[in-house]
Image 1 (cartoon, rainbow, N blue to C red):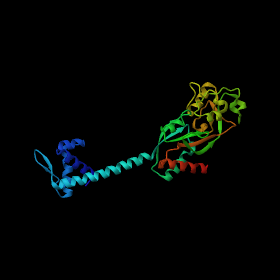
Image 2: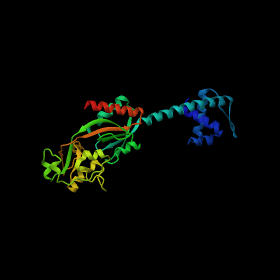
Image 3: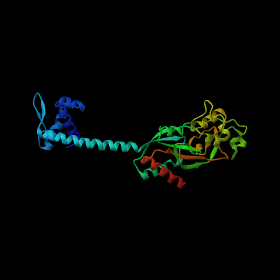
Image 4: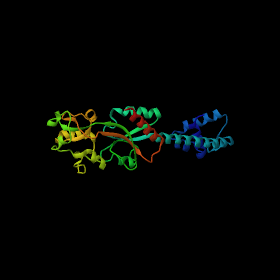
Length: 287
């Protein structure tokens, strides 16, 4: 006996017409009728009386249909519970730029060590919306640049990356082993969109123009913009591997490094979110 045959029998009991019952399941009456006959053979009793004019339930059929409805309600309830559980383990991950770079596989291994059924869908974050995307429920988890507390969010520190300045390859600065902000005082900066006052403080002179129209929002676009305009911009050292460009150089720059964190909503206490937070703490300890 299979669940599908029971569903067919319940539908036939409701319609008392093979054609209409079969239509509700999007099959033709002949195979529908064969499923009913097979179910009756397996049960060893007739469930329906058929004549050329009508279909009626037998007393045995009435008892079976009542039990089948209760069984199908239970099956559907379990299926819905499993669907909800699966949905809770599918998290939308918002990623700023290169995210966790080479450490992403370490984080997923730690998450799946906690629960192998947790999965991620991808959404791109930008410099201007990286915090708000999480707070507004557009994403469940964000890999962002951490510069300090943000209302409504919980941060787990994942990694620290040295900062660099992206300069045109033709610039005299391109051959430097290391630069300071004073070395860059006469250089024009690309306007970069920033989402938080603390990011502006971290950026120093690079924050000029952060609120101007047309300020760059995507870290991946910075090297090409530097090559095109001849202006300079801040970035993280990993950008030299993830966004290489033949016409720019990534030169180490004195100053505060780039801190990368995994952010979640403070009010989100779902099991999968707790697993991600725990895995990030493991990642932070292992660095």
